Length: 493
Image (tube, rainbow, N blue to C red; front, side):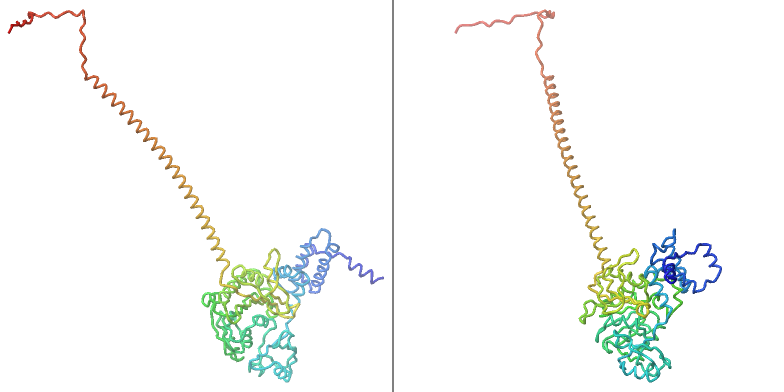
């Protein structure tokens, strides 16, 4: 009964969230890790049954904020990174991820089949006091090393090029790429040569591999490893990967882009990431990755007769901004599609994150976590190029064409309107002119009539009429005598 009451009390107890006054007291003292861990577990229990276990008047966001602060203090992270992991994985899985990231990953070597077989190499290393096992059923060349009395990187077998120190997660991109003998392959970020040598191993030293990297000092290690491992079909070069798309357009059958990233998946190998990486750093890396990915697609030949036209994009980060968002950006800019990676393990990629929604085919990509697969955090996406068309430019061209059509239609409409207006104006002018002509004709006719009348009146004025003498008018007196005319005498014959 006592145990039953105790369990009931523990299950029904309400966790007291620290007040601001209590937090000020904690700020002035060093909180032991055991207390932080106990508080984290209590908050997780409350979040698991929030309605019944929460403190009255407290919201869920307050518990999440308290949990993030305690996790950041316990594991030594910047709080913004912990907030990002909580939003991406959830409270319980985020705690598991942080705990696993503090533990070292098992040492793994990859057998170089150009010079040795896994069975023979395992026997030789076991004779030197190395305890090992095959890596996993999905790998035929990996060996997991538990314990060794000799340094693994200095054995005669290592110096002879029989194996390469390589993490299990970094083998997955090359397996997804699946290069074939005789292919023309580009490794855009090759240093220090682990993946490049694995590609050459799968190609059996046939074909061509262009191993590119930006920094010359890193390529020194690439050249040394390729010589040690017996790779004879690789050419190293130093170029800015963002320019390879224009300089080597449609030149490769397959491309591997293990892009430079923030390293949020390999914290166990580089603990400085906890305090040196910020969210703005992650976003800057994502911008560079988008440029490299677009350039890689431009350099890929989709018309390859060897079954090519494929590329693999991978990062050693678990951030969504560097993985799904970058691939989703590519889907909106180039004519490509995602295909199955061929890896039967790993978690599918995100199709949604917070308020963002991605293409459904992103579920074909693969994620690897340290707390799930006991591997470095990794991301792998396999992409097939369909054509050389560029979606963004095509959309702009379509928009420009539609705008030109609209403008042309508007111009035509304006032209038709202006023509109609001109026609109406011309008709009006004609009508006015006709009226004017008629008026002119009428005015001319009236002027002609007036002139005719004037001429008639002038003629009438020129005609002299005989003066009628008045009867009462007296005769003028003259001094001359009035003589009668003489009568002619008529003589007989």
